[in-house]
Amino acid sequence: MENNFEMTAQEQNITNDIMQSSEAIFCSLDNSTREGAIKMYNALNAPAGRVGELIGKTLLVSDVIAEPITLTNEDGTVSDTVRVALITPEGKAYTAISVGIYNAVKKLIAVFGLPTWADPLPLEVKQITRKSKEGQPRNVLTLVLKA
Image (cartoon, rainbow, N blue to C red):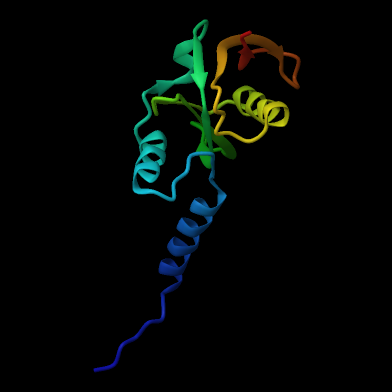
């Protein structure tokens, strides 16, 4: 009986896609333990809510996950972006597909260093209006650090 271990092109594409996806995720959670891996998986797959639902509220954040994703708009346009999960010390995750949130997280990391933040950051979710490249107003989510 002969074993054939060669992958078809489709199997290779699936394998590459999965490997690239897992390697591209930034996660500050320690996922080297089963408990940490479960916390990471649940943050990505079953978050407690969306950041956009928390406008005007303050969220204590100790960890962050950033995951590259591909979106297809209603008109068929495909764009690459980042889904961010803000994670509380209790392990609840709130996600956003928002350039404003992503940029705010990058600035928080530049100022406070890489999470896990032992002293969780109190972040208020705000919605601000900015002009698009075309000059049209658009709403953007951002995070304001509370004292």
